[in-house]
Length: 223
Ligand SMILES: C[S@@+](CC[C@H](N)C(=O)[O-])C[C@H]1O[C@@H](n2cnc3c(N)ncnc32)[C@H](O)[C@@H]1O
Image 1 (cartoon, helix red, strand yellow):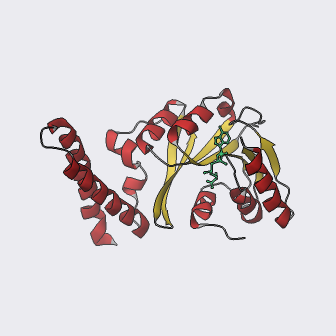
Image 2 (tube, protein in one colour; image 1 turned 90 degrees about the horizontal axis):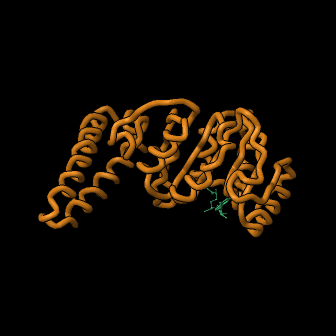
């Protein structure tokens, strides 16, 4: 069985020995990888029985002790104090729906990989009493993924940090640089698609482009 670059990157943000609740585990590959390589105790949960059957089959192949539970979000899950919760491969609105649960009070760490709307995700998770301690990007099969690690606590960020990530904007490495180049091209295309009469919309995109250009100019020469 092979583990994707994305699964390995997700695992790299999980503290070894942590008690991990993987919400929306699907195939259970993250839980298998964490149990094998990171000494984690994992609970693999999913709302879909078919996904859980898939996870159970995969876990059997490795003969591992991973709890598997059917649950809508954390509803059926015991969340012991100091747990880590991973939610990956879903959209921001579903992730926020799952986090709308009192049980998150017992979480120390939250590791999230959303498929969309990073700004909304960062803002709303901050409101739940978490702050950002790490962020990584990874390109897997030509798709860019951003993975964010939150910890219990309070911080404030500015607009551009909510959009692109306070940690990512300080990172100096080839992957992050490529990711911001990709974002630069994306926002240039967005700007080109906005008619001149929408002055305010164009100004907002120009502001973002300016920040991205700054990152590229500052980081490029040091790589
Ligand atoms: C695209 S898969 C991602 C699987 C895995 N987390 C990963 O990153 O590779 C999304 C999974 O989330 C599950 N899911 C969606 N909504 C859920 C919810 N409210 N509670 C638990 N699981 C959910 C789906 O059934 C599906 O198996």
